[in-house]
Length: 112
Picture 1: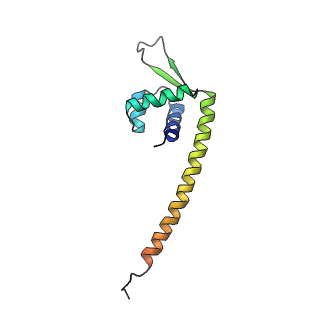
Picture 2: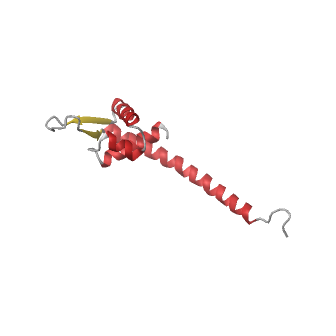
Picture 3: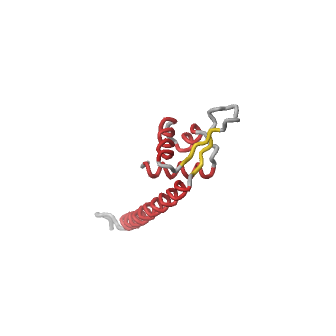
């Protein structure tokens, strides 16, 4: 998975559930906890995500992850690029499937 794709998945996940933990995100996205932490730090550094610690929460490690206005814009751009790439892949796959169907329907050499 590319960084852009991973960033998009994290942004989508956070937009839907800002109170998700890093561990939960890592499990849902199938990446290591360290990789998730690295990704979140990158998103914070880009200014796409803001981490808020709830000081009144007895669990001092509890954070909420909020998409910033820049993060919302970045998510829209990443989504558009991802969709365009997937549409190209889809068209290529349709062409390949059609070629394979034609190949399978042709009689083999030596058949009557």
